[in-house]
Length: 417
Ligand code: C5P
Image (cartoon, rainbow, N blue to C red; front, side):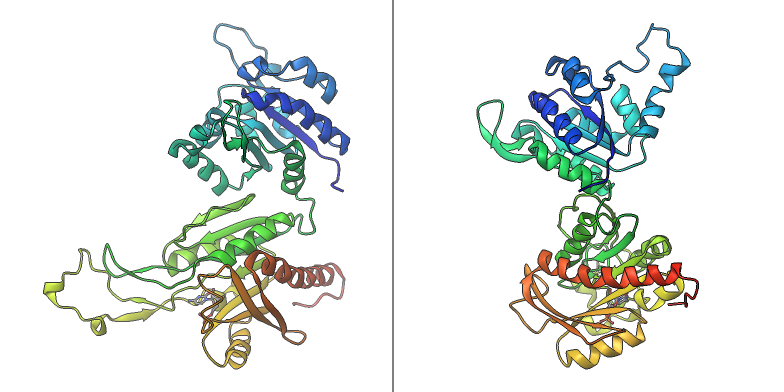
């Protein structure tokens, strides 16, 4: 059961607004306080009085600074006060218009000014016709919001108001309530910050070519999603991959190993756990040609001079002395020996090793099978399973070490590690 939360529920003008009454009822039934803020068009779909009675609080629906209307200072500050009051902002239904306004930071009514002033977790439950949801503009706005760590509950497929069946239906109130509680960080990793790297890096040769690897990023994305589900604040540093940002995860896109190192160094000092699932290129071309290298100029690959990339993980202990550090190793032979050596050399707490000579699992597969080497205790073998499931098993291991470290830090006899 989640702790009681103060939820600011933004309702925008879609037909699904009628379900917001049920959402308020369910939030209240779970012990949460609810305050509703309606956009002007929402009022056409749901009566403010209904939400007022169900929430037990006055509903905010006034336009912010209507031209020609005199406002006192108390009204001008109302959105700041509402943002300070709320622990979670949930917008359900979120129309295409409100998603666009949130993504662009537009602030032209009570709900959007409050959203802009609000610094806590945000959940949106989009609801619209599938044609509107699938439009590149809406998808881009949704992508922007996801990248900023906004939680998405739905939309789901089903009957739409138009009578058609398609993607765009608002998630059911119980799903939205679960997202609100997860976003508020009521899980076992609440209050923790987890940094995850994922995917390959691309090391440019010229403006159109690069050296890369076959990492799909799926393992790292599954780990980031799992950390968010457990209530952590999650920063995901992703190499070039074609994957959607998991709900509640703040994503930073990078291309090269050096860009990844900069991003990791910026975020690792605040992290309690760093999971380096990215397949970072060990070497990069020493020179990047300014123009496309032409066949006629003759440059056989053997002539590409390489230099070493920084080993991000090996340098992390100095940057994040408190954090639990997890490395990944993809090996094609002698997994045991290489993995143990890497655990030592990189001064990691865990080294998750997988055998990439196995074509049926690892890189591009949805499944993985790994052995986890650790500082204390015997290695742990996880047989083949889907990557999200494996992510959950791995987090069970990491979480235990995190708790041990926190206990030691708070006890007077705490050692350095
Ligand atoms: O040495 P190897 O590349 O096998 O080590 C893999 C682990 O080290 C992974 O966790 C990977 O993210 C990390 N790594 C790194 N910087 C590099 C190479 C690997 O942080 N330049």
